[in-house]
Image (tube, rainbow, N blue to C red):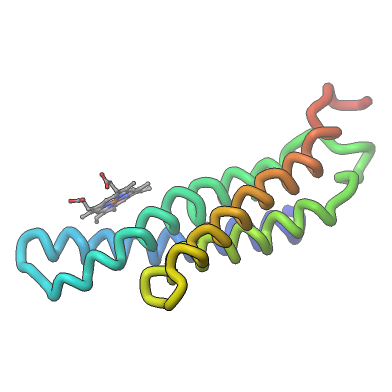
Length: 133
Ligand code: HEM
């Protein structure tokens, strides 16, 4: 497995662990109420599981498995940028409720996530081809 896929999938599993933990706390809160601030965990729960886990797992596997050029994966720099940006974006959105400038941080996080998607597309587009070409 290429090094970038290892990082994508490790990061995905890390976010799965955190996302499920926060989900369990939120679920606990429904039966035995905790302080109301516990709801600030909801954005992190959603972000970690939808993008940090699911999307990152998909990107990691795609980088590994899409058709290659002989043995090479083409321009890998945008894919590395996507890895950095998606993690930056996920954490900005997750931490925004705890920090000043919440809305600006949330917007910055979303922009980072969107740019990550574009960067990965730039990397992957030439690899969407029949094998051997
Ligand atoms: C891949 C797995 C999961 C995803 C993508 C996910 C996603 C979401 C999303 C999008 C919401 C917001 C729903 C809304 O506002 O209407 C939510 C809420 C919630 N999730 Fe998850 N979740 C996952 C797994 C879990 C797990 C494993 C638990 C518990 C152990 C959990 C517990 C909760 C709770 C308690 C809420 C709050 C529900 C409410 O608004 O009353 N989630 N989740």
